[in-house]
Each structure stands twice: as C-alpha cells, then as structure tokens.
Length: 167
Image (cartoon, rainbow, N blue to C red; front, side, top):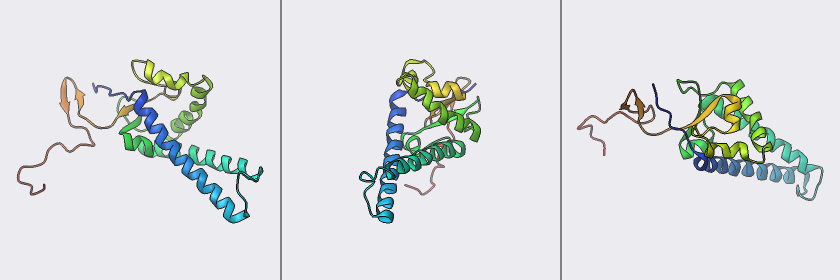
C-alpha cells in the first residue's frame, strides 16, 4: 500500500498564485495585441474588454485541462512540486476528469472560497473540486512509503554508482 503525501492548502495556494500570474501575463498580451490591431487601449474600448476576458478564460480552461490531463500538473504545480492524481496508482487525471475538475472550481468559488479552504481543513487535504472530480493533489518529491519501507520516488534517482565521475 502506497502512503499518500497530500499537498496542503498553502502550497496549493502558491501554485494557484503562480498560475494566476501566467493568466495575467496572457491577458496583458491579449490587451497589447488588441491595441496593436485596433489602435486603442482595452480599458478605453468597452467592447474590447469582454473579448479579452473571454479569451483569457478560454486560455485558462485549456491550459488547466490539458496540462492536468497530460502531466497531472500546471506550471504553478510543477514549480512548487505537487501534482494531481486519480486512483490508487497515482495516474494523472483523464481529459474528462480534468474538464470536470476545472468546472468544479466554480463550485469551490460559489461556496465563498470554503471549497478551497477544505484543503486546509480536511485530513486528506482534498478541496471541494477534488471531491467532485475524484482527484487528489500530492507532493511530487520524496521517497514513497510502501508496506513500511521507503522506496525512491520516480522523480528522484535511486543512487549514483560510486566512481561515476560526476560532481
């Protein structure tokens, strides 16, 4: 039996903040592109602002869904060293589960943030969107404990041979 290493609220909050920084950069890029194409500032043109927000939302949806389905991590999660998994084997979520998890973010928001706070309050560190999608967020690094004995994780090399010549 593999012992879970759940990622808590604060490390997940940092990952989310990093992803939001990426979303802000994308939104600023869309605004700059709109300025180049139409020659006006997005803030000055009330018709452009909803378009920029829509493109940013679509980017966030695709970014989150595709990265979770392919790698189990967004860039923010990669930086802080956590990943989203499903099932006992710790596999990344499927594309369908990733879409459900993205949609379930809105349920976590609709509870005035309590859906997110659940990650800090529950023993298993699962937020509302994790419960809805059947996922969990775990730490990536460190040895896994299997039947009472530690084994190296897939991310860390088991050991370097002596005299390998590397420093």
